Image (cartoon, rainbow, N blue to C red; front, side):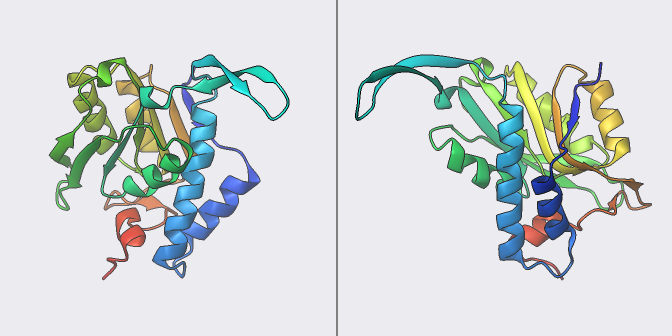
Length: 210
């Protein structure tokens, strides 16, 4: 049984349409990806464990289920993943954020790590790995291996758009890890960019397009 979940919702489609549009400015792109990340987090955390606390309303005391925010770690893959973590942090302001830095060799299309900073107790946490793009799958797989090397056991990967090639590679490498996708696109081109895609997510988030 596949562990891949493609979001099917008009709000998701609406936000991705805005992100695909080449005329969408960086500020609007950032806002769209934040909102998309929140919708994906809503779905990805549907089965997250909760604890019960007592809350006093203006009328009486009542039992209420809450999330242990400090047990959920957000890990954006730098730099584009920051656009997603910014959105989810609004929902979970007390959740720690780790960072994994990856860059793609433009000739070989192979991902290389240049930075890693993760919480010490990540082995006991629920990890949301975040990257807007799942193209070849190389960066995502390398990031998961990095998380696992630090002891992480419970990982969920969230991305805005994905290519079938990257999904297949990721599923083969980690069939146990849930994958949440905003839109599953058609294919990769000869330069390993997603089609129809949305361009370079990092450049569009930070306004560094040439």
